[in-house]
Length: 612
Image 1 (cartoon, one colour):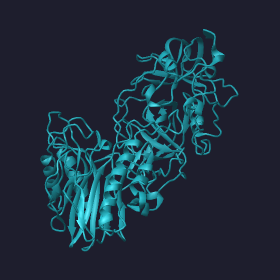
Image 2 (cartoon, rainbow, N blue to C red):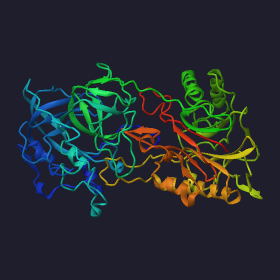
Image 3 (cartoon, rainbow, N blue to C red):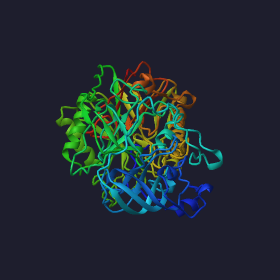
Image 4 (cartoon, one colour):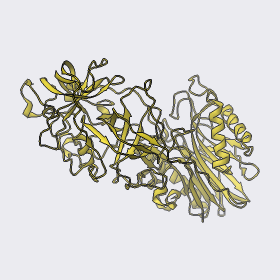
């Protein structure tokens, strides 16, 4: 999961292409050219891929349980006469392309082609959705009772997440027979397309701009005091999480606004879908009511006179075209919630005209608008340092030229300027002697020609002085998780391809810190920023290799370790890591954004206070 993955229209996977790619397989038991009077559970079968994929079927009957008139248009049917096999779903999505003409409660007979649709396309790694395509629809009767829903609860969802993928199939679980009593993904798949319900459940992922939220049906599962569900390891996947959408168009009924810790009360009922941006999703025909739990934004303690406060904050593509309200809200958070830290490393500061792709790379207007807003909010008159990137070479939004920027309070901290840095050709290095380290360039970029930083932000190093003591701060924004497969991938474990680049980036930063510590053993070095990876990840292990750094977030209780909420998982992306010379610090992940429907950024800032 990236700090953000661009949202785009899902790509339909044509059966012929899927079969040609070897990603989907047709069962040998369905060798005949077609099937007449086919039951829904025969179409669904006992694996993730229909045994009738690519076949024409006729006389498929069921009751309409949900109608979707937007997006991927179609409707769901359910056979009211279930078979005895818990692995076979009795529900099915019927893809119509145009707005369906059926209504909930219609009994229908269908002819069509069984297909497997892969949300996001064949290369996404997503599981496929079994569906009936190009249907001819005959309404047999109207006003029938909808088949009783299956209640999804904490007691029905297994604790084990998924079976291990078949090595002979490249780690895929597509061909494995479902075991819904053992694995959560198999349980959900056995209900694909079926009418399901949840009772009152806690919200663990706030309402997003796409009218979605996440709940957990397992309130005891890795919960924290603010109501979230903490993602603490690759092995602990929080099986009770479920995405909620509504079948009612927003123009007819606005989607409720919910924060983490709120409750979705009453009954939420509708077909269980599978989509690109969350996997198994309850598409609600009947939506519960949000009960506000009164979640409040946190504020950190103010640093003492002889404490240095260093913070990091991803401000999410900030540029002068953003409304003044965004600048004011971010500035107020710096002053009130972060207690005006002495040094503030910002990520995702865009250039002076934002996403306009015209070669502009300077960001002085962006920073001035932000620092002016901080002063207006009652904060210090921060000075700033940065290095402009090459145009469109650091990733992010095309034309935006995001970069890291140091803000510092000159009343408390001085910056040691050593000129000569540029975007690519002149890296900063470590020099010094007699037990005192220094940077050759300050501010300067670390190893910018290293291919690890291709299409990614280069680390920004700066040398500060606080109460006569030199402090080195390295601001980072590592490569995103874009391209990684989702937790519900048909590969188990999922392919996390983006880790390879972050591993190289972490190794480069680790080597630079070791250069400093090799000269000055007790040097105060802070590696800060949007690391885009977890505290238990290989990236973090590479940063800490050889004892060079310690992830300060690990000083917090496990339930408090998070800076970002993705698909209902409260997780670490933003970090501050300390060198061995940094003693007796206080660390705070200040929760002001990630858990809220109204956000100034999608990240929570991090603050560390210590006495150099």
